[in-house]
Length: 114
Image (cartoon, rainbow, N blue to C red; front, side, top):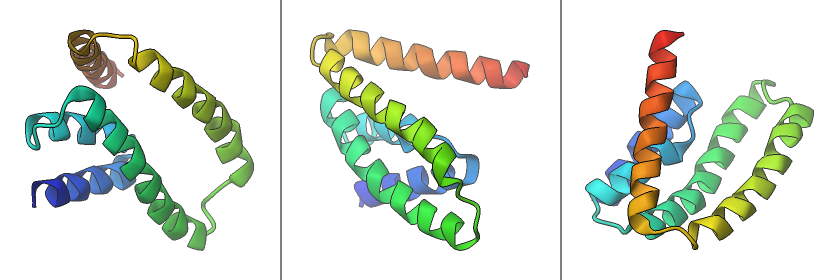
């Protein structure tokens, strides 16, 4: 049930605010479901594919998907995901945890300041 709740929250906020589901799913998987950092990241990435497809179907039905722009963002993002996945395997778990927490704080501060 915890995983279902995490999925619902991540999907809701992902579609509502356009945030990556990982911003919510990874911390929730670590804190609530007791996943390890790497397992949470990998599980979140797999779930995001499913979530993204559902969102694209809804937005696409409304004619709100610009496929060319999506490709301009998505293809480099895929390359970045390959690089990030490889790099993640070389970084300690504590570095991942602190780095992710710092990223969340910085993004939050920037949003509040804008």
